[in-house]
Length: 241
Image (cartoon, rainbow, N blue to C red; front, side, top):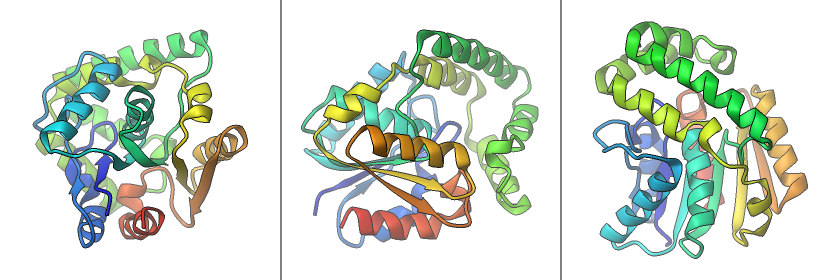
């Protein structure tokens, strides 16, 4: 079967996908790398550079066309990779992810906000993680799930590298890919948790604007890798069958 490549979100690492890797590895080769600035991975100067670094990694692993899934930041990178490297993606699964902000004004405002957050990461990483995981987007994480995430990020995160990754690879640094989404010519799925109305709405909008199939997982919010890892693994196995 076609190899699968799974891309984690901001602050994460490839191990966040372990349940899905275990399920998909029963039938195919699976790669879940640390993204630039995360875990042990080198940094990238931009999202474009991160997408090209992913292409280099696939070449090094002797992988041609792949099934590509990404969560949040990883989903945005997955979409950009599909745009920059046509023919390398067979199926694309965007988990709690968007094609970017539509206007230059929105992107400029987001870059300013991300720069402020980047300064907080460097100044006091533990305090930043506490605030980050308590924002409304992650309100549906249980106390235990939140504690595990914070402990993992403290153990494996490099604050300065993560701050630079947020600036260079954040939503504000990404061009609008709404129009390229329509022209990709590959099978595309948008996945969101039912308790994450923002990304359910984005998925619905993608489905209306492009040939994108939307799936909503019940009883879960934004961080499906932490909140519903087994359900997400089952869904990926089905979508990529």
